[in-house]
Length: 332
Image (cartoon, rainbow, N blue to C red; front, top):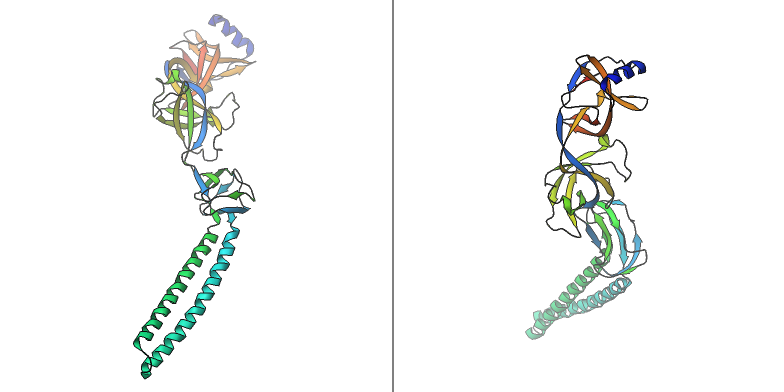
């Protein structure tokens, strides 16, 4: 690198002479070494919506990706046999009602004969018993009809929870069985599932803070302002296929698609570096400079920048070359 005295002449020649309002003492700082990995959005709960009766699907009111509310009707299953069973139940009830009317007439006649002394007590008891038997048969037939009607009403499939529809494995007109899955719904809460190389198993710590980048897999040059903060809430003890599995909780990822992948920066170590406030960096003709105070005055020093990060809520820029520990950088 050129001596700093040469940069004085370069500064004068380029006309760089901004006013300064303060100093920043450059000191070596220890920060977490971040590694970018892909995290996959998953739902902690996935609830299946199942058919309560067998039959064919006459209505299908949802598709993959739809948002549904708990209790919302999402499909209608029709069993044609239920209509036939209902007609049979009505016919049976009608026949039993006729028998009940005859049993009532016989009971009234036996009561009248017994009152006049021409009838026997045995005949009256038999008439009462026959009337009670037919009455109970009518009640049982009506209960059977109620069961059939309830089965017909259960053909409407409702969403078991509020969330996003992940899959719909059936189509309109499909024949399904009792308990078969109509749709899978993810109500949340959502979290990120990370899969890391096992060499980082001893470096990641439960409770560590992470940065979740913006949606999409494309990387940008400056992603710090769009990053969301999260934390590692669980590290699974079993290593599978050379990968360590960890879960990350992040606020506000409910608008992501389930199984969507996004970049996550996780701490995997520590390193020391030199950094300055972002306001101290000036770019002239594609070259980055910082103004440094020396015993002989102020000079502009060319620097090579590294990554941007936050230190106690302040934005800092890493300086790879050009500065030394203890330099005094002038702030505009």
